[in-house]
Length: 317
Ligand SMILES: [Zn+2]
Image (cartoon, rainbow, N blue to C red; front, top):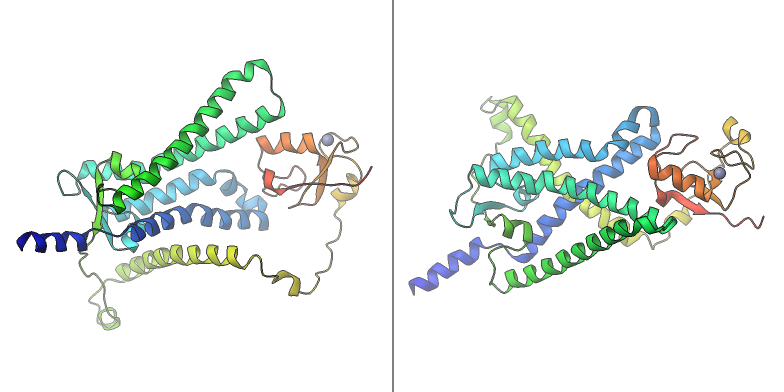
């Protein structure tokens, strides 16, 4: 009977796989969501925000470091784990000590940054290989292939981990937590909320109120962004855009006349005409892909741009 009672309490402490995956995907929302904002600012005012777009990974690293450091100190959990009422604990000591803090910080902040950099590097190498494959590229090819295989194996191992957590065989649901021997459980957070009358009567410091408001906004903002992302994806098939009136076509600027019928990079007639959709300028396919591999902006307008913004034109010339 006593054992039964013990099992019941530990089941309450153990979060469901849904809570864990939800908190994980909330964490993964912040990076692309803030990137969208940075790209938007960059396209509105390239002179002012070009650096944020260019060094977005580093800007996000700093932001993530500040936020996760705060939540790890306050709740012993990441921001999204805190949002779902979860807390971290060492599987051996059952506590959250300095060692666990350092490991968690590395796993939440430093390692994702390094992995993103590595991923970008591999993608660039892979694109170059597809362009011009020679014999001395053999090692690069092996490197790219090994990386892709390791990544696929990791994702497969992750699925196994989910299943073993679900069946109760594992105490952790993902590989980073398993490797750092840190588990997650429901938190018994102390109530640090305050009412409106507390603020009026001055029982709470003004800075506490502001700080708490900023953090709440961030937590709910992340959740809202996740919802927005889902909504955007699901409503993309509905033809909302076709219901809007046709806007007036923008006027040509002086640069557009200068480069009429020639590639702004090589000053020749376009070989395989390719338009950079964010600026509307047409280049040779080779010229613009080579440029975008080194710089993430339009060579004429300086608008932030990536390979995804290229469209091949079929002009029959
Ligand atoms: Zn060209």
